[in-house]
Length: 367
Ligand code: ADP
Ligand code: MG
Image 1 (cartoon, helix red, strand yellow):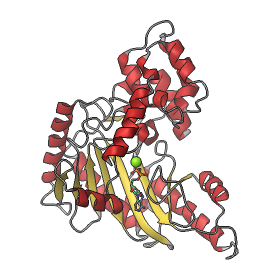
Image 2 (cartoon, helix red, strand yellow):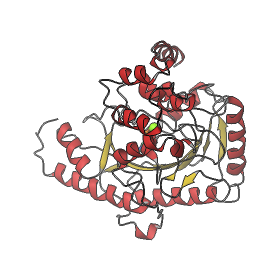
Image 3 (spheres, rainbow, N blue to C red):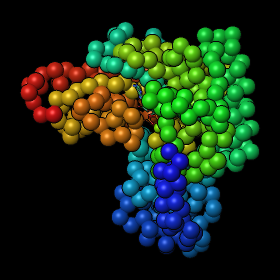
Image 4 (cartoon, helix red, strand yellow):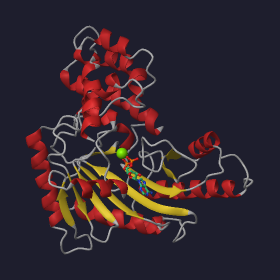
């Protein structure tokens, strides 16, 4: 990991359009990029009345990954809760494009599992996972937090996690600083942890001081975990290797609820839970299932999944290309503008439809 990381790091450091704070240079560097940043930056700068001046450092930090990685889909990360308001002329159109919603609508959560319309076990599903992202009021987000603040944030979260000892969510916190490499790798293989090799996160500054201040609160029997100071301050996860998605969602909601009583989560009445990536706002929840559909032609599968409100990833997540020979990861594409239970119901309806369509394909079909 180290040498590869260093190589990615050097590449990001040497490509430095962000070294210029001149808006003209920045807009020129984005010519040809299809990111949401590239689409909306010029109009946002005009609206922010920043046209002729050098851009402030806070805005440069927000758009850094989109400048360094022109192939980004979104291209901006929030550096703290305040920047969503401060740079609303940039964030709002990006959020509207990501979630296809009107940001002036009020956000509403609903985690009432009685409203889940799913079978106890979903046919064909090999693994179910629901995660939500949370940040804490008063702390900068991953791209901007200092090493000292990150340690304070870790201690704050770990204190809340340790106070779960009398609940069904008692577990152990492992610091990544002291975790043996073999154990770390096993947790990556088991899908609980991810290697710090995402170049979008890297270029935004998420991996500074890695692994200091990071860790995982992991249940001995499996079933749930909380990642601390990952892409967000908390990534709360429930997962199990079967098709019991409703059970997994219920566990996630219960754990999130207990933590919400102990920690002050950053949120907004329109944007919901505030996350570092605008694509995660709102519920900040991604419910996903692993399902093999080997006979589906991949392009047709992606289009059909998209029209059903789903996203297709590979078995190892976001940057693993979907491969028909392995299970796909299907999840809710939208996170803001619908409630938690609605998104899970939509996921179920979508994969049920894909499963049925796949079942009707000839067994000697493509793939
Ligand atoms: P996110 O950031 O939304 O949590 P990623 O795509 O970055 O998701 O994936 C994080 C990890 O979670 C990866 O190892 C991925 O394979 C794993 N994962 C996601 N969904 C499932 C699932 N249903 N079963 C097992 N592992 C999963
Ligand atoms: Mg991820």
